[in-house]
Length: 401
Ligand SMILES: Cc1cc2nc3c(=O)[nH]c(=O)nc-3n(C[C@H](O)[C@H](O)[C@H](O)COP(=O)(O)OP(=O)(O)OC[C@H]3O[C@@H](n4cnc5c(N)ncnc54)[C@H](O)[C@@H]3O)c2cc1C
Image (cartoon, rainbow, N blue to C red; front, side, top):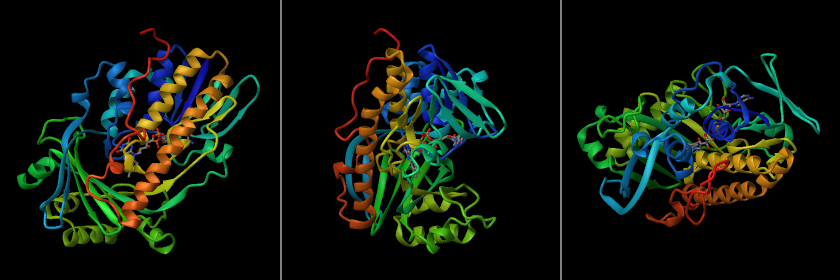
């Protein structure tokens, strides 16, 4: 089968690697005209996100992630409100992407290809790109993210719903922070929960991928409520005066908003947590949206990762969900010869996964940003892809065990 993957970020690239391994003729089409680097920031790193690298590419988890052994909650005065032993792994978008991209045939990863239109017949599917190129094949995987044009075309009713808050994010090199800060924050995910909001801090690999303590970054994610309309629009108006929707990237957030979060951090957050926020040179923000589809398979076309369900980040499971979609897709296409039948079989469990994760992350978001009934150590707030804990690895598609 000839398979096109639209969107070459973590979901699309993991899927493309899996389909390539299964022997399919795979091409990736990415809108960005330049090689993807340094997207986003830290990632809670669940098993499915790293599964391709550890199981197929021989990469050691310790080389691409940072482990923390504690979940810790602080009071405003910096004293410890709750400390429990719990192991998490953290990584970063560029660390994972940097390893994945080496596993895929570079001649088949096409930058500068923005999908503008797609159509299919009983026999094939054709994608058209803004540079005039076309792709015709047997299957088209839409991994084009939260703003997916394929979803907008095939599921126009599945509009993004603003969750009522944004995530302010940023990273600081550990070596730029006082030892008193890194000593307190370096071995844990650290939470501070305040009225109608919360912030979390955790260590992640450095830009060049170093995971050695002292050489890493400290990453923060601060969820803050903004009213839809004027208040949100003002926040999303960047330094050049353009109103953005999904995110305002590093260096583009209006100076008065950067000054405001720094001031609020100093006034209201525990000192060690505020130190990370105020030392971040270019904080950036992402608007939190819910997106739900009622179909993921449309004949020869499927929606995968954020292109299907965009879920709130509270389970740290977005990239794991996208990867899981990819593992099951490769398995179905490998075992069912007919493309449309394979996608149909693939769809139902992935819809269930997306719905369950969306519902759980909505609940966590409501509890933390609106209801204020979050108890430190509450198991509802543990990172995981599946409601009842993450499952064991399934057999590899296209390979005998
Ligand atoms: C605040 C925040 C914190 C998060 N924290 C975590 C976390 O800790 N752990 C975790 O696993 N996930 C986390 N996520 C979620 C995670 O970032 C997403 O779920 C993940 O990036 C989805 O991957 P994807 O490949 O489906 O889409 P994306 O990463 O959005 O990639 C889509 C790709 O498609 C390309 N594209 C778009 N349109 C077109 C087009 N028309 N033609 C061609 N290419 C196109 C884009 O350029 C992009 O490269 C977080 C999200 C947010 C907002």
